[in-house]
Image (cartoon, rainbow over all chains, first blue to last red; front, top):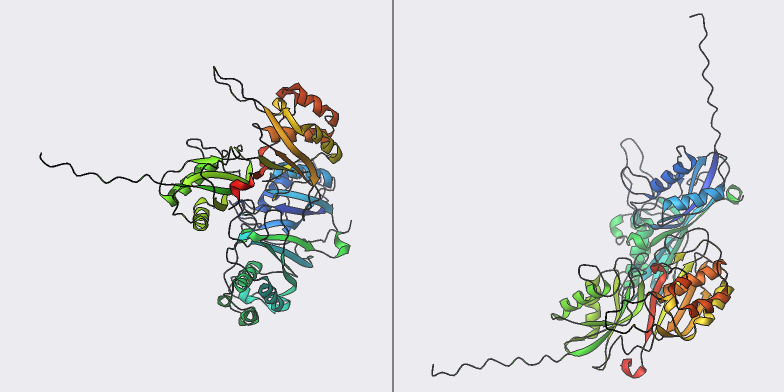
Length: 276
Length: 276
């Protein structure tokens, strides 16, 4: 009484700066990229390491929400950290903390509004198939082993109908719709899709599917690969692929290829957002 | 009494035929190639699978006794199986039984006296080093990550003194000598040893050491790599390697490189023994 309360010192609004990380990972030990309580995930491990280094909570946004077992080479993540952080030092410290299954390849300052997810112009995925009789223990973690000889020419023909903007409902796990909400669109634009033979010093049987699109629905790349490998096996004709796409029904396509052959290779952004 | 005992049918001496297997493996899940009771080993897993298929005990002889964590691509194994076995069918059945970490690449009949170990003319090993700042999660299982920039020219100079017949005591774990027995010779002949840069679609930093010799002592390739990488780092001069070799003392060399970068690539035999 009679005395004014001592003013509590004003906590300055922490001014943060937006950072973009390029991240590689072996998908095998994780339940996917997106955080899930109590499960090992790429984002969970990365966020924990980042929070240890910057000593404050960090929210991360990821470009491609890859499934359990899917690998990443050019995954992109954005989040806000104190401006005192030195990106090169941060990379070294994160790599010491994250362990062998996750590697931060680079860290760069980006404009404050940058979102790894919403500013992405395209995503580029790779899928490796080892097509020979004998398995290869050192390729087993990253390539789907298919024993029946595949016809690459048919698989290439089967790529053509994918190019362009289509409703990919036949190749996607349909998302759950909450009551009162409209169904999410499964229309996506594929920019390129190719199969090629890859030189390798242990085998002549390594085939690689590369697909670039503005965005992908859940399990879309793996479902396309599963269908095109069935074309390569001769179980389906390349000419059927247009009809499978037009059916807009998951039952029309083949089962998804297994996750371990898939890798998120690169994510593209407007030059103005990522050029230092 | 009065009746002669019924003659028991003569069991025919089982005539067996010698088989040569070429075997690849991921060394990570195994305690090495040679069988050890109660431990997961490549030979243990392979022998069990083979005995399941041929339904009788099999003794196996292995060309290169690689350590825990070392990989194999061209490991060679010999053993005797019933002549009714079809090698191509055997390969398929073994690959179904052995699981993803072991693959039988081929099976061929060889002359009865063939020994995978004693008939080998040379062994060829590879050692991969990933020389860049950031780790690569998908190369982590098969390459030693060395962050300090390595000078390839010096590492190549350091190879030259290895060529030829030498006592490699400086680069070997000296075997235990049983009382009353002479010390085993550590003299070996190295036919070639090179370092080169390997093209890779994810990195410019993959370096490969290739060494071919008539035979190798325990930990010899890894000790040579450990020493040459120290030369590449500038911790030792390339000119010191001759003196290290001449010292015939393990203390003179660097620590062995870790096992996961090493792979037994190929084993050579006289043409007459392996050409079908």
